[in-house]
Image 1: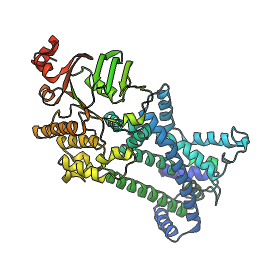
Image 2: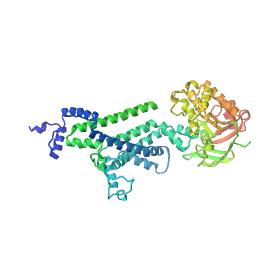
Image 3: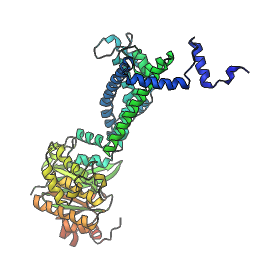
Image 4: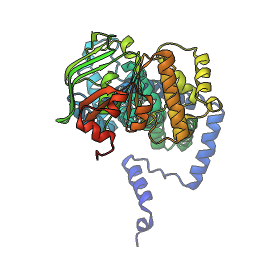
Length: 264
Length: 241
């Protein structure tokens, strides 16, 4: 019996991948993974410049994208959740569709918009980000995260009792104050909206790869670096970045859970 | 004395169903007007119109001799009227935060003295830091009333304020309503199912049936010598709904 018949499907994929890339390098075994975790932790705690530079860019892109998504998504979600106007259902359907947008499609769309032959690229305006820049990556991330923030916020404010909103109005609130009070009452749901948005931003790889280009020292973020380092067989850095990414996600969710607890 | 509210030919429908059809209703300053009638008579809808929370489909409503354009009710007019609903819709946060809420909407950030006074008056001092969601029904309703009264409204609209409350809480709330009316001359519109409460508190009583005001009269006349046979049946408890 052929030897290759005894290898597991995972190994088969690795072999095929390696042959295709003409490297024929074995995938990581358990030893490599453990060593990778140790090395990754060492890189992280020793302040490895390459690792921390990537973390820095990731934090910049994620932070800016989340902030913009919150500024756009929370008010829009609140308005869609609380007001009735012709075309609202159509907009809601578009938002729900947007919540499931494949990131690579977003990447492609943003790429086509910003490229020199695209719709916005030739305008050469300062507010239009250029391809293969951090700003372009932020733009793509915002397109991915905004529908999630809008959708979750819409649902959260919709769950605030209409009687409470009526009572707030009756106590003399302006429309804006009513909106603010409703958002405050729905704050746990809004927090979930932000966590959902951040989750999509942190885990995203396809769109940022397309519009950022994964340029070393400039647009390389954790997800794109993990992809690259894995392809290179440089598992230590990939695992180190993976640990940081997971750790960040855990800390953010832990903080959110704490905040939710306080809000109760 | 000129009425605070003058309603003429006011109608309101939801999904094609007529809820209100009021030919005429005047509400006078400083009076307690009890609006009684069966469920679905349109009493709560009337309160929402009086609080400018909803617009009538047709007709006119004058407030202090000014016609009200419901598309843009001036904030200073809206803020002279407030409602306490049957289910006290309290905001998350403490009892104190709830009492401060309306003051903060008005840009008044230092209202601690007023809050203390209200907490004492409503027997809520021990609960000042308690979260609103942990209150009993009676406590929550007292907070809701205190939250409205701290704003010193010239018109107070009460939608079944003592429904589902025990006698102690109901009596306390009735006593506060009477006091506010007598001391501050606050105009009060009280929607109630309880005809005994209407008799105890009101200066005038209006009977609503199917969105219409059947009869409005001073309390004694309403209960002892009503004009309309339906009022008589209602007062005698013969009207089934």
